[in-house]
Image (cartoon, rainbow, N blue to C red):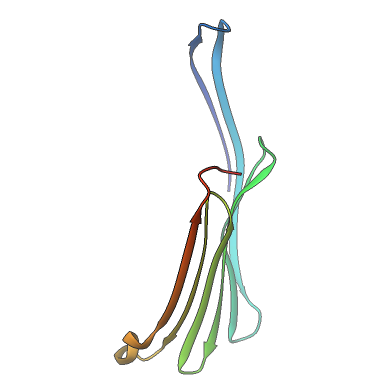
Length: 111
């Protein structure tokens, strides 16, 4: 998806010019199976054409371990960086046996 937005605000009295701001970015995502049991997906890739920088990237890898499910989610770029690692049984009755490790880091800026 491509998006473009333009904003024209009020008159800046210091420069006697109109305040203007515009953004142009592209957002993409998708998934594919590396093998029948390995899945790789990208949920959010956002590139800003104005700043010419990646704004965010989020992806996940999952593996079918027969009776168990392994999942890794990572967001290495953006103001909030994170990772999540989960191993859980597929059987609903054993859902409390899952192992989950999550960490997030907030940088406070977009770059």
